[in-house]
Length: 106
Picture: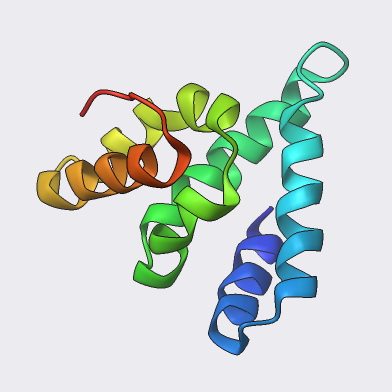
């Protein structure tokens, strides 16, 4: 997952939507393997998703690239990673709700 994080950051910088679709699609698939392989799901959550909030370009992409089902399950990780930057967390959740017509709480 560490390599995918590096690749996703590069793809965002290059605006390579094909590469972004592949990476986010693969990580979503991994995350959804919870019943078959919890370790794979956990690796996607803590090795990829939680780190998306570290860089501005990946944080801003979350509303467009992370499904509401997954967002709801990893939201606490985002909050934890941004505990010292509460305003960024609130902005993320508000933007996510606006883009996805959801009602997640800050």
